[in-house]
Image (cartoon, rainbow, N blue to C red):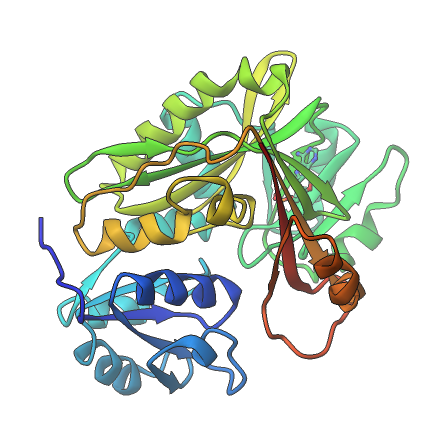
Length: 356
Ligand code: AMP
């Protein structure tokens, strides 16, 4: 275990709101953050000590950045893996690259979960039109076609209803390699959010009930209803097994469907996650702080609840324009990500409410 003293520099790959909230948590503990991102307008860079603006696969720029950091982490899972191997020697890199390799590929991810005893939706790999016909013949409809790589927030997905012409769905995913997944009948969605330290200690936060609208997380509510509470132990055991198998360090999020046959694993994010934003005020230690603690080799903070009930509501698109009204409710904790222009489907901020 390598403890990084406060004052050290933490490099963060990615410049979005997760990097912004990680940087603020790191600053509280006395660390400096250095953001590396391709966009000039990176909301994480606005709250960090340093910013390198280069493409993700610019190896000379990445190497220079890595040499200027004591530890490196990432805030989105689609960081290209190849260039990361080039900078591994320069600074400690957590979570491990192996976790990115798995999370970037929906087939690898589902197989990994199954190999560790988890249940996933029945699925078939689709590389061409004929595969799609066969997949739908095998798994039936309704189904969801998802690109194997680069999908998030419902992007790169097409929902197939009974009787649909498949051509339109194949076009909708731009003929990319896909998985066709059976549509799961679930009562609720939830996520297991854990942090694993360099010494292997694992702590879980309370399990949020996640409500999605148009494939995007809209609300996370704690405590979760009984149907989720009943499936929590099994889901946590799977997430912990997967974390151990990857020698994981940092925050790991696994998303599940609660079904009448138990938890069905949907996907994992090897990073802090939107369904954990409530932990900033709603838990004794936030996901952001514990991620920083883990990658710096510090003792992990208490993940216990700070209130009886916690609600997190995402502000998507124009919802964030109501900031004045939201601030007018004095119990709201308002977080705006500084993204300027609100566009439909864009995560602009969130609001957390605690109930004591
Ligand atoms: P994903 O990008 O896989 O997280 O999917 C986004 C959202 O679409 C999920 O949170 C669910 O609400 C829904 N969804 C994804 N896959 C399935 C499935 N196999 N069955 C039912 N709903 C799904």
